Image 1 (cartoon, rainbow, N blue to C red):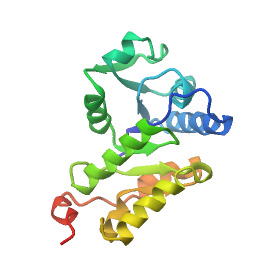
Image 2 (cartoon, one colour; image 1 turned 120 degrees about the vertical axis):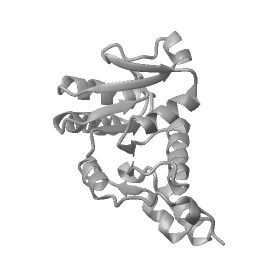
Image 3 (cartoon, helix red, strand yellow; image 1 turned 90 degrees about the vertical axis):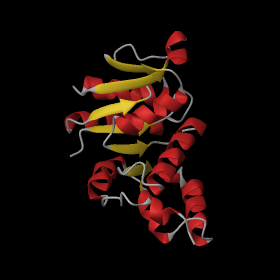
Length: 194
């Protein structure tokens, strides 16, 4: 059962409007499906758009933010449920603990880092939930090519391609989550390539 989805996304207000449109659509879609949004708590960029659209559609939003960001007033004022944590590491841990699935929208280095850590933890069997990469207009093509190259050159196994699912349309995000097969809790024993 999918009750809460963590969405990794950017705080930049300078990205193209198509990215805001997709974040808005996702926020509305999750609200209509009665799925809570778990996110970084920000008020700007795709983070702000996602949260605002979910809230205005009657959805539930949980912000997770380190204290230093609250001190500079980055927190979304309309979000009523917040978890403030000590640092970025604790934030990422809470993202995983509070969610039934992860979605990565286009983003910058923070989004990349969160996504790759989740992929790594799933490879090791420390995180077992669905991971969906929203590859809007091919944004993540270079990353997906790199991951596939890692498999091709035996840095990862063929089975590791099942750790993530990439989709091109917002409408495909929830079906991809729901169709994700269970990940082996014993994945640690398959993580090394011998």
